[in-house]
Image 1 (cartoon, rainbow, N blue to C red):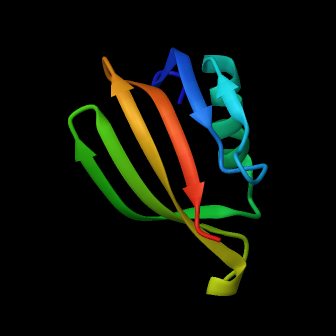
Image 2 (image 1 turned 60 degrees about the horizontal axis):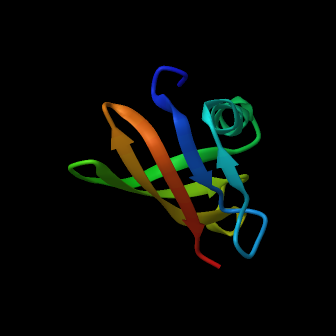
Length: 94
């Protein structure tokens, strides 16, 4: 992941509600994504990815169990510059 994230990356996270945490800089953004990737108790299912120039919309389901009641759906709005992620805004249904 470290080769995909810009030094000035910003994440607007899905939690804590209602507005989510704002993470600024490569170190903070990488730590957030690496913590998610390390978890063996939770996982993401990619539902759809739409790309338009510098922007992407990623629809996903975040799971912590086998049935739909143990998951939540959401999207990330991403922006890329020079092949690096510069912005990621996450939103969940609920």
